[in-house]
Length: 134
Length: 134
DNA sequence: TACACCTCTTGCATATTGCAAGTACATTTG
DNA sequence: CAAATGTACTTGCAATATGCAAGAGGTGTA
Image (cartoon, rainbow over all chains, first blue to last red; front, side):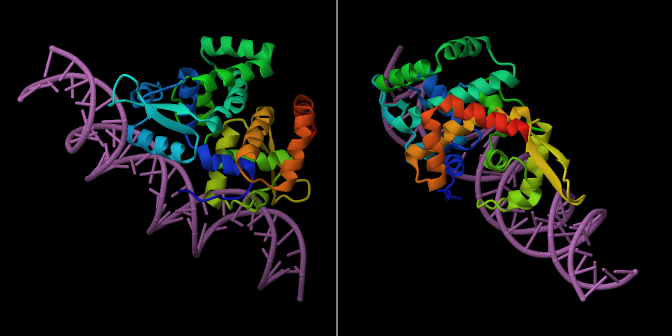
């Protein structure tokens, strides 16, 4: 377990999910609601299996995600966001908005952000509610 | 230089500032507006000098910060945020709000967030304007 | 029973980080 | 003006994290 560097909220947040992969896992769970181990491996960034396993464990320990049984098979595991993970939706939206201004991003994300700009608060609230239902 | 892992906005953002230190440097610049190399070293997290130098260079290359001459001394260098860096204010605010919910954070940060909650959009707008003036 | 699938684990090479010391130049002090 | 101090880095090396390839163990399917 990594130690707390300071009591600064930014620092503590980075201690929790401030690596190159955690937010991508959270992204997958925000768009798909529930993912298997294999689903995460399919993401275009190509996370290594050992890193994925260690991140999933770490994020579970940090209370961001939780495991549940897959309804179809005992061999599969489903991961989903906890309330703490779902509460990162506003952070993710702001990152998306920032990235849109400075990078070239996919059309479907642009379309999503167009909706966001119409009513940011409403979009976020609805999105979080939807995730909580899953 | 690190390569682009995918065209996902989250991924591209993480490629830019997704490490354990960059956002802390940005935090310092958001609160102090201008910092010297030594100022960054004084932060409670205790960044190593080689990491600091490499991050400052990387962030300058990424267009998040810029150097300028210190008015008092040629030996000193001032760093400040660019427009691209200032545009991360909304992201930082959301991270703070998230962290407040799940961690114990300093009283002064709590007081700041109390102001944020009164009028988030106004607070962010004013904060960014203030940074642009510096 | 054999075979494929899925979630990890392991071993090892490479990259990044952290620590301690050192360098180069600017300013201050005696 | 010489020496000490301050400031921004650089360098060397050990510790840690990441990335890649292969494999292990439980499940489901023919």
